[in-house]
Length: 210
Image (cartoon, rainbow, N blue to C red; front, side):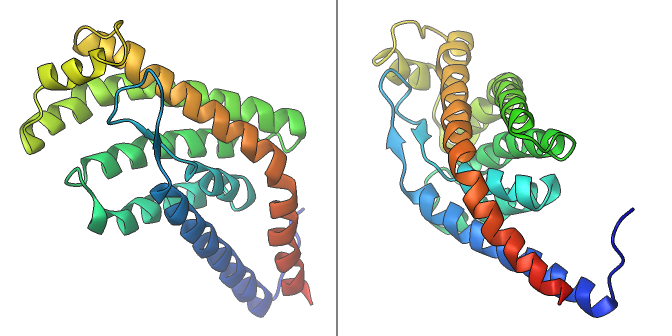
């Protein structure tokens, strides 16, 4: 049975949740700027750690909050975009799939094993959904909006990975490994830092009961 709260306690709890989401969003925005290129990956795919606070938000606050943080992170990044918003759109869609899947599963299995399972499934979903997303949406948008033809993108990718020869192999040997690597690294780091951060956030919730 859920614990009954007074309207004032409920209001204060909601404020705490929104404040926590805002702090996690700020952390994600900062980390989004610290991006690096990865060896053997297409040069336009940059890795960053911004999904870590988003995933923590999805675990602590719920999967819907995770999606909201993901959205805010990318909206705040829009003014400095170099991709006319296409990169941010792709980041939002892929990131939302990852954090919502992991957060939804973890909300039902709130154990260390449940956390591992949820993040592994989230990573698998990220890699799988990214296949049609990049093949049918992202790459065509880059071509039509920015003028980067698929042939040009494939050419710059082949220079760092000889397995990439066309649009399909670009998705298979470029986007899929990148998303698997990103999902696993984010999951690994989140697994080790989630508890102390969640305890700090949950400690603020306890104050709403006083």
